[in-house]
Structure formats: structure tokens, C-alpha cells
Length: 263
Length: 293
Image (spheres, rainbow over the protein chains, first blue to last red):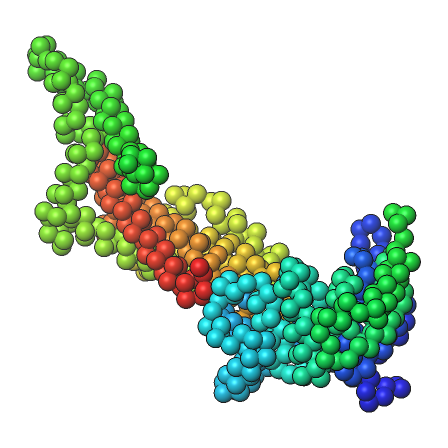
């Protein structure tokens, strides 16, 4: 294996076909992608392009039917068993019978951390996502944005190298979303994690990423990979700059080319 | 003012109760009227008024349908005026029925939960056990109860236990069905989350499936505890020597003591209501501690 030290994810010729009653569905076809340590990769594309499926393959929640994938030189299953990644879902998926603090501590309980260690890490996690003081609240007492922040703290509580995020802000309104995007960027800067982020919002992808992977549907494949290296301490203001708009245009162009309107 | 009362809880409840009681008194006149006319005829009383007839139908000794106040008087007599140790006391019979009910409910709900866990976790049992669980409830308990009591008698198991077994037989079913649904209630997202942590089956069970099943469990426990009481009463119809509401019903129908039957029915209903309420209070306390709003 040619995995260099900084290579976090190595995907080559990956394909995944779901067998359904209506015949096979090619969710992913010949996908190749390398993710370096510290990258912030956005997967963008219309629905049905396989972006979520690709993320789920990385997380070992789906199994590829062809090609190869390695995470830190391991199979996705080994990586999952080693608790190499934290996963943030579309919905916060907080357990309603647990307080916010207990929700953030859930992975720690499962992984067998001591009580003191758990308390300390939950405190840090709450602080990281600005939820200090909400430890003993139940999820329904928090707004949607706060719930999603809690779920990010939960994913980071055991300090995984890799953060996988599946449209985490998709259900939130634009104002909250902007705010969380900025906070996520600060968090990424602070923790130096590698992030793979699924989205269907062009500004979100351009604002957050170091690399934007434009995908196209039927069969799901990578259409283009766009480098996007704004300084790490960027703020929302860069969205007004011409460089930002250039990249956004390239992404939009890519999405347009990749999408066939025949159907 | 009236509108505010009507949109509240008290007035509608009172209104419905009043209507039922009124219909009841009318029904008593209709059902007991013939017997009352016969009684007047036997006494050569031909000059009775309508009021005499109505009052007569509400105060017979063995009416087809006793009036509510007659049942209340009987309840007062057998609950308050009679010593609880007496075999004529409904407190005594209530104690007999409730002890068998609670013991049976304990067995039934435990069995129900164990079965649910097995059905959810052992795939082959879902297919092989569930049909039997369902089939068990298609047999009328009234037919099964005497057989269970006779068979257990063969093994010298008498007293409380056979009745509790029948109570358990009725109460395990709702608990199994509800608990299976509850244990399967976590959505794919919640399960995927556990998978991303590489949680073991046991961890997923205790940290996700069990807490998720709690609301379902309490709903079925409420049904189960009432079913348990029904089972005990049915068992007491067969095995009446120890007393209990069932025995009281049986004796009442034997001697045509309709007032006694109705009083026992009301007492049993009150017990069922109390049991369901206790489970309901427990439900509220537990779900509140688990973050229900």
C-alpha cells in the first residue's frame, strides 16, 4: 500500500450497487479520492449522486461492491472498531431520555471511559460548542441548532482523528446555518481534525472546504474536484470576494454539467 | 361561565354520568315493571298508581336490574358495615382477588418482558415463538381456566398459585406485544449511531433499546394489569372456595342475588381502575425522570 503518513482516506475505483426489486441501482461507480490529514473535504451534488452513500461507506455503514478503500491504512471496519471517526448525522439523533451532558457522554460510556474522564470530556465538549450551562437540559428544551451542536460535541467527545458529517445543517434556517458554519470552521482550526462534509449548498461547500468534490447522479460518480484554499481563519465576509464567487461558479458549472435533465 | 365549565373536564364528566344514571333508572323501570305488576296483582292491589309502580321497581329484593342506589347501599353494607374478616365483606373478597391478581401480574409481566427480549434478539424465535404467543390468546380463558386448575390440583398446587397462573396467562400477552414493539422502536439513525461507536449488542440493548421501549412497556402494563384482574375473576368462578370477586359473582348468580352481583362487579371495576391508575402514576414518574415534557 502506498499510503503516505498524511493520507487519511484512500479510495480507488470504488463502486456500490444496491440490488432492489426494480433492478440494480448504481449508487457509486468508479469513485477515486484521496483525503490528506487536516483536509476539509466537501461532497456536493444533487440528491441521488451517492454523496451520503460514499460517506456511509467510509463509516462502514454500507459495504462497497467493488474497488478498494482504506482509512489510516485499515479497512473501514477496522477503523470503525478502532473508533477512528466521529459521525454527525443529518438529524441530531440525540437520545430523548438523556440530558445533553449524558448524550455527549454516550460514546464515552460505550468506550469504557472512567467517570472522571467522562465528566471532564463532557465539560470540554460543551465548552467547545458553546453549550456550557445546558448540560442538564433534555434535547427538546434546546433549539435545532443547539441540538446539532450537541451532536457535534458528541462526535468529538472521544477525540477521533476524522469527522464525518452528513448534511449536518441541512434542516436549519440560513441564519443559524451561517453561524454554525463559522463555528465549525473555528472548531476545525482549533482541533486540526480531518473533515468529510456532505452538503448540497454551494456557498456552504466553498466557505468551509479545502477541496470540493462535485458529484453527479445515475450512476453516482465524481465529476470534478476543485481546490479551494482560503486562509483557515476566514470569516463569512469572504463570500463577497471575487475569488469566492469564482470558485462558487466553478462548482455551479460542475453541478450543471454533471446533472442530466433528461429524466 | 357555563362555556368555561363545559370546555373543562368536570362538567362533561358529570353530564355523561348523570345521563347514564338517568337511563339506568329508566331501564330499571322497564325491566322490573312486569315483575312489579305481578307482585301487585298477587297482593290483590289494583289501585296502585304509576308512582307506586316506579318506586316498586327501584326497591325489589331480586330485581332483574337493580337501581344504582340499591347497589350503593349493598356496597355500603358489604364494604363499610361488615367486618373485613367476614366472608360477607367485599374487602375480604377484594383482598383475595387482588393478591392473586398482583402475583399473577408479576409473573405475567416478567414472562412477557423475557419473551419480548427473546423474540427481538433471536431471529428464529420471532418466527417460531410469536405464532404460539398469539395462538395462546385465541383460546377463551373461560374454557382454559378450569383445565389449568384441575391439572395443577393434580400436582397439589392449590390456593393462590393456580389463579395467579391464569392471571399471568392473560397479562403476559399485551406486555410481550408492547415490549417487542418498544424494543424495535429505535429508528435507523439511532441504531447507526450505536454502530459508529462500535457498540456491542448488549450495549445497544441497554443504552438504546431498553430506554426506547419504556413508554411502550407502560402502555402494555396498563392493559396487562387489568387483564390480570379479569383472569383472576374468571379463575375464581371455577375455584370459588377461597372467595374473591369471582366467587361472589358465582354465589350471587346461584341465588339470584342480582344486587350482590352488581356490587361485586362495581367493586372489581373500582379495583381495576385503581390498579391502572397506579401503573399510570408510575408511568408518569418514570417518563418524567427520562425527560418527557
